[in-house]
Length: 547
Image (cartoon, rainbow, N blue to C red; front, side, top):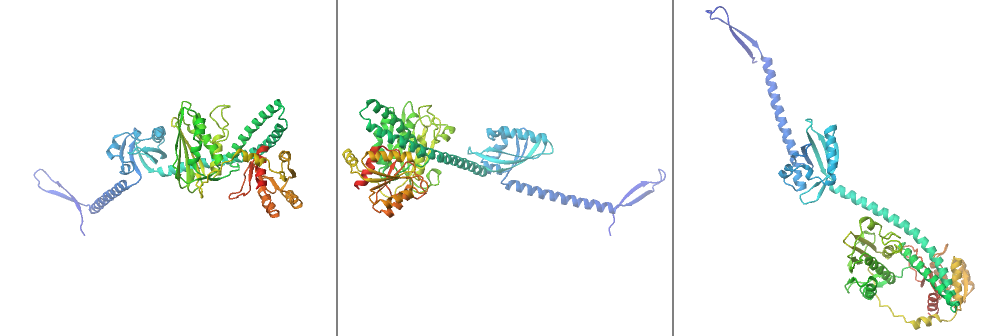
C-alpha cells in the first residue's frame, strides 16, 4: 500500500556543522481526502455543466416565454419562443423596452404588478396583451418571481389567446341568451296584453261601425264617429305591431317572389322616403320565392325604409339587396336555404348601446311623439315567426345594415289574382243565412252578432266550444260557423275539426288576432283578423256562403 509523506529538512549544530535533520510526516490520509475532493469537484462541475446544458436545451425548446429582466423595463435575456410566437427578431426584442410591446390598456396593470413584485418580493400571476409582429395582440399569462439580487426578475409566460377568445365568445353567447330570454319574456307579456287590447278594439270598432251606418244622416254624429274610428284603427295598428313582435300575429304565408314585390313597391318606397333619398334595388330575377306573409313583408320593408329615411335627414341612399344563402340564419337556430333581404342606408348609424336596444319594443331615438318604437320589433317578430331571423349592424357615421332572413319556399310563387270592386259589392249582397257565433268574450260576441243581424242573418250564440257542438247537433239548418280561436278548454281550431265531424259540409270562419299555435300546427280554415269592420265580416261570410 502506497503511503504519502511530507518531509521537512533543517540544519543542526554550528555553522561549520554540515549535518541536517529530516522529519517525515505521514499525510496519506490527507492526500486521500484531497484526491477525493478533487474527484468530487470534477464530478460536480460535470453535473453543473450537464444541468446547464439541460437548462439551455429547455430554454431553447420551451413553448412558454421565458424571460430574465430588470424592473426598469429592459429584457436582458429571452427564450427563442418569443420570436417563434410573436414574430419579432430576437435582437429587436432585447433592444426595446418591454413597455413598447405591452397593450396600452394593460400598461398600468403591468407597471403596478412589477412595483408590487419588487416591494413584496413574492411570486405573482398577471396576464396582459403583447404585440406581435403582424400587429395582432396575444394574451399572455405570466408567473413572475423576483431574483434574489433585488434588481431583477424571472418570468414564465404562456399564450392564452385561444382561451381568452373562447371566454369572450362564451360571454357573448351568455349575453345573447340573456337578451333572448328577456325578449321572450317581454314578448309573452306583450302578446297577452295585445291580444286582450285587440279584443277591446274589436268591440269598439264593431259598434262604431254600426253607429256610423245607422246615424249616417247626422253630420255631427258621423264626424264624431269617424274620429273615434280613426283613433281605434290606430290602436289596432299598434296591437298588430305588438303581436308581430311577440310572434303571435296570424300569418298567411305563401310563396312570394321578392323581385316582383320590391318592383311593385318601388313607387311607394320612393314616395315614403322623399326626393332627397335615392332608392336602389339589387334583386336578381332568378331567385327562388320566399315563404312569408306578403302583406306583413310589405309592411316590414316599408318600416325599414322609413327608419332609414329618418337616419338621413340630409338625404342619402337606401339599397335593397336580395341574395340566396344557406346555413344558419344570422346566428339563430333556424337553418336551411334562405333569402337574405338587406337594407343598407348611408345615414348617421348607431352606437353600440343604441344598437343593442334597437329591436326592443317601444325603444326609439326619434323623440317623443315621433315614433312608436315598434317598427323594428315588428320586423324582428315577422322574421322569427316566419322561420328566419333579423339582424342589425351599425356604427356611428357608417350607416345601418338591416338583414331580414326568410326561408325559401318549396313551391313557386303564383301571380295574385286581381280583385275588382263590383265583385266585392256582389259578395256583400249575398243571401241571408243562419250563423252560429262562438266567442268566450261576451262583449265581442255581442258586437259580432249585432253586425251579422244588421246584415240580415239569423244568429245563434255559444260562449264555448262544447256548447257550440251541442247547438250544431240540435240545429241542422245552421249554414255557417263563426268562431274565435283563443278560447279556454277548446280552441277555435279544435272546434272546427269537431264541427266537421258532425257536419262535414259546414263552412267555418275562424276570427282571431292572436296566433298561439304549437310548432307544426296547420289550420286549414278561412280566417278573419281582428279587429274587423262590418264590411270585412260581410265579405268573409258572403264568400263562404256563396262557395
